[in-house]
Length: 129
Ligand code: C2G
Image (cartoon, rainbow, N blue to C red; front, side, top):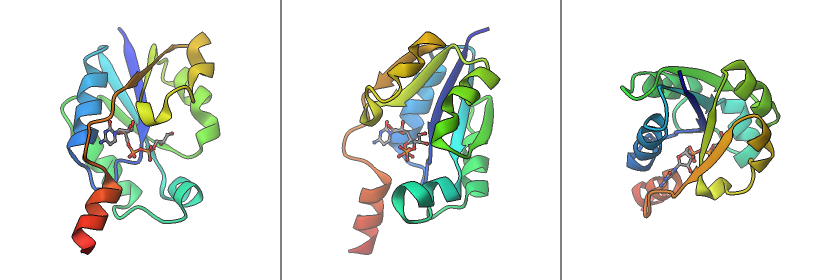
């Protein structure tokens, strides 16, 4: 049984989110997703997500390619989450390239190319105009 883990906010869930989750799931038997909490987002981006953590957890949990979701409370806990969920592979988008190489001793770390031309920020900007 091969476990794959990934993390993200997944606010205003879009096609780029779907693609990385599907690609991550295809690497193993179970995909476990850490959805970052509202307060973690506030500390990183100085704003709360549009969708609450409960809504984001619900959306991600309902996807066919996802086996389990949990709330990511802190960026510093990555190692604990990887060990707790017995992850064999950590997948992140290439906006995080190199940032998690330190976990290569406990699991395989893979960065996927982001889907071009779509992001939560861009969606917010387009709707605003
Ligand atoms: N993503 C992608 N293509 C896009 C947009 C996003 O592949 N066009 C990927 C990102 O690279 C990330 C995942 O989708 O791996 C989730 O993106 P975000 O919600 O923006 O996640 P982020 O705020 O970067 O949170 O501990 C890490 C954080 O929780 C990651």
